[in-house]
Length: 276
Image 1 (tube, rainbow, N blue to C red):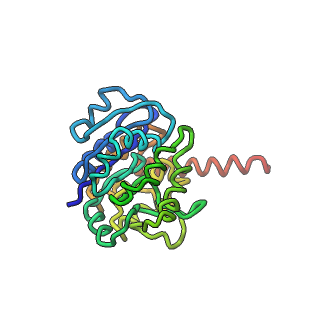
Image 2 (image 1 turned 45 degrees about the vertical axis):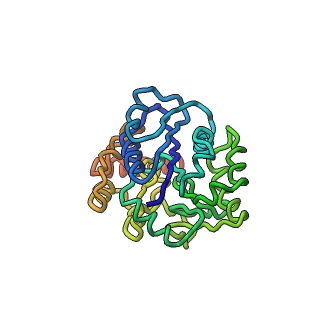
Image 3 (image 1 turned 135 degrees about the vertical axis):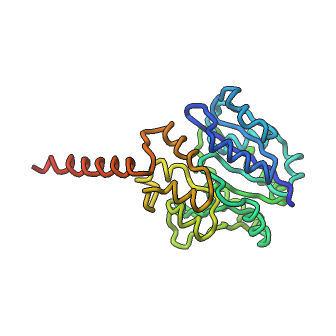
């Protein structure tokens, strides 16, 4: 089995480590050493939730978003230690899961011999791998230009600034990368979570796809949590608990359906009034 390290970037505006994040850490710890850093000062008792499963857990308000947290962890661990790992994973807590076996995906991608890979690919602005979950092999970890890339991360630039340049940057250095799931339609792949589960055993579902389905979900939302649970066994009460805590959420059942139907009718009525 490959020796791996995971650098996990966290963020929660209420400074809470949610149940779904604890589960994410637990599962990542089964395939790697996990180091966690959050943007924002979290209480000690929140960090204590994940300490049994990680090598390190800390937080600080640095305004560097995900790449700032990964940069901090790289500096904390050090390149000498990082270069002793076969693979380095960077990921964040913007996804629910895993809902399928991560090791199966690593086995599948490992047979293809890529230098780096991600779960999904993105054609927004330019072709790049989505950085919520990316993997780099030992050759990249030892590369001076790759190390320089992380040294030059600047607070204030958002995740997308660096996410969109990382894939072409590595490609220009001669490294070969690819996506676990191909985006042939050049669409928002993460807007189809049930489809991805069916065709590729996709391990994660994007949080904002379920938090804001009107904008980020292109599948039927009704009873989607039940469908996810039946397909994967994932404890979807963690999803419902999180969404209930961060917004006006009433589940994905009949109450959710009725509320959204009424909201839609109200919107149509409000738009009709000015024309009377």
